[in-house]
Length: 239
Image (cartoon, rainbow, N blue to C red; front, side, top):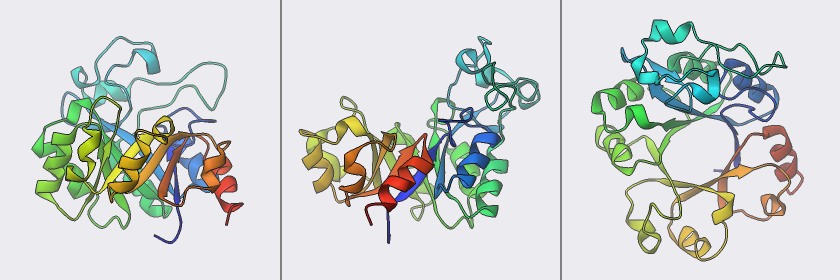
């Protein structure tokens, strides 16, 4: 990779409501290299782009995504009142967002969420959707699910999301994935050395564009941020 990439976290979610077409379109306009998005599954098997498995935070409705059909979910709008950028958005279909990224030359980070964990048939469908996409990787906190991806198509890059308590930090190289994604709070000891010695692709999330290490961390190949334009300015200023 010739330079680090900037991924818009759930789209340009610092200015537009997360995981909406509005946020993804804004990310493209703001110069993001790629999009990070989340995938859940409906009751009837439709793959949709939404972070939470429950609609309470995003739509004010206490319903599980996988208890609703795609048609029922299509009637629901997510967002917050007070701004046309943040209110009244439909929940995108995964296939539509993949097509948008292809049309706009955007890299793609697909994070698999709870309702698709451990489901080989769903993984197979996602892998079919991304056939021909030139720059895509699949990430998750769930290591067994990433192993399903690995088994079905070893050529697809997999990235394990790390937390302090969910991985064995003494054995990072043993994880059969291509990359690690981690919050900026872990860019310090005792986590820094294991990350650097893991020989994996490293991508950091939680950055805002104000961090000094953005211009001082050549080991990081991807920045995942709500503020893609701000982060682009910071890293370009360091080149």
